[in-house]
Each structure stands twice: as C-alpha cells, then as structure tokens.
Image 1 (spheres, rainbow, N blue to C red):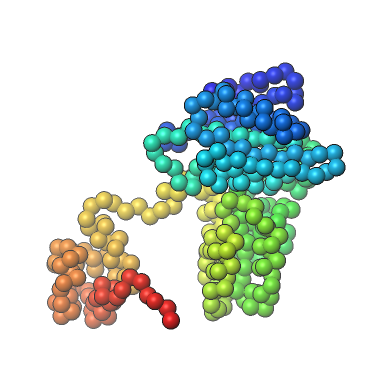
Image 2 (spheres, rainbow, N blue to C red; image 1 turned 30 degrees about the vertical axis):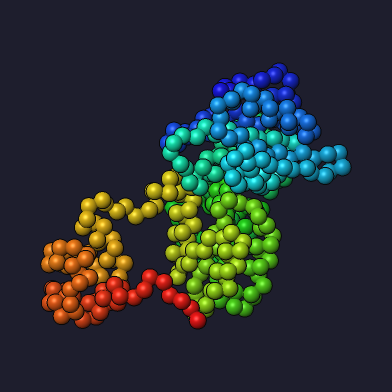
Length: 345
C-alpha cells in the first residue's frame, strides 16, 4: 500500500495519497495526480493498480482542459456502481482541472450501504487538499471562499426568516448555486408553498441550474399554505431530491442544523433506538397508531400478553382496559383490519 510519500521528485509526476479511512473492516484510500493527457491517466491508473494488487475497486475520475479550453472528463466505477460519476461530480463542483483521482477500496464481508460513497468522496477531498489542487489558481473565486465548517447560504436567501432559526451551527453567505450548502456533497433548495403557488416556474429553474451536482440533494419545503404537493413529489423523484417538510420557520432551521451537525456521523446517530426485548418492539409498533401512547401499550401487554391476543380480543373487552376509550379501541382495530396497501382509483 502506498505511503504519503511522493513517487517522483518532478512536481508533475508527484502522486499524492490520502490517509486510510476504515469502516467495519472496509478500507478506503485516495490517490491524486496532476496530468495533461489521457495517456498519462492510463499510466497513473496502471501504476495504482500495480501497487494495490489486492484492492477490490479502483474508482477513477479525471478532468483535462486542452489549450483551446475544451474539457475532457471521464470516470470509471471498476465494479463500485455509480461511484465514478459521483467522484467526477466532486471534481466538477470544485472546478479542478488537469487532475485525476483514484479511490482504492478493500472490501470486507460486511456490506456498506450508501455511506461508502461518503467515504469515497471524503478521501478524494482530503487528497485534493493535500496536493493543493483546490485553491491553486485553477479554482473559481466563489469556490475558494467556501468554508466547509459552516452552512453556506446563497445570497438570494437574504431576508429569509429561517436564517434567524439557525443558532447551533455557524453559517455564512457564499456564491453557490443551491440555497444551502450543507457539506461537500450535500445541498438544499428551500421552497415556500405560498411562494410556489404564486411562482410555480421558480423551482424548475432552480433545479435546472443545479444540474446533477451533489450526492444528497434536499428539497426543504415550508408548508405555509394548504396545497397538494403531488407534482412537487414527482419532480423531486425525477431529479433525485429528498423531500423534507417543515410546518414552521423554526422547524426548517432545525433540519438544516441537523444535516450540518451530523455531516460526518453515521446514519445510526439520528435513527430512533429500538431495544430488542418484546415489550419495546410491541411499543414501537403500536405507538404508530394515532393517540396510542406507551402507557396504553403497557396496559394492553399486561392484560393480554401478546400482539396476537390483542388482535383477537373483542371490542368490548378492549374498552374495559384503563385509559382505553371507544375512540382508541376503534383506531386499534382499524389498524389491524385495514389492508396494508390501498389501490387508488
């Protein structure tokens, strides 16, 4: 495996290497090199593959600008599906040119979900910073000023009240395409339903400008009027956006804070913890029914013992339990009796 030492004393021949990133016995390391031709890319790729013989994947992306200003850019997954394009998107976002990056991965028996893409991009960003490829004069001034320790806010959001609700993480204005930059690969567009009702074309223009950049794309929608969002949902699905609905400015601000604060955390950190014992699982299941609380579940469990017996108990017997009125029992039985899927006409 490579060390962080350079390969050659010539600046253009120097290969830079990130530190190892380990996750559940999976290992990621990124390599970067300055070059000017596709032939040099092939030599670079073969060099890495020769040195990293036991690697599972070598994900490649490069961008080369010729003397006429035309950019040639390509990527290779090497078996890590979709990773090459995401790595290339990072190079586009940072506007680096005449650079090739390879992220090497050694897989274990433990399967990593989408977090593997975050690891790949994190290693790539580290090696680009190490080689001073970002901010070396080839990068636009708008990107140079970005600080990834803070939420970057598009100047078009000046006056938006949700900025006053972002109190627990720093934020600053920057020249960016999305409304909020929450990380190197995460962005958000903000949309008020009231504004959308008056200017329905606005969000289409914003999505078009954003193109296919960023790995996690959030559509933060403020529900300030009663309006169906079926068309917005379809738009987000087609353009790879995740919808988050907020019913107040404070809630919207809190979502942005959470996304930034947990940028480098495992998804398990924000997931509800459910214990393995039967009562905890029963509580998690039954409290999904409207108005049923944990006390109600304990009452039912102590009276009937199991979910199967609760389901087979009559309406009259259930209403005899303390704290369970006719309305709660009706909702419980409706939840048990209604089909899991509904066919829309």
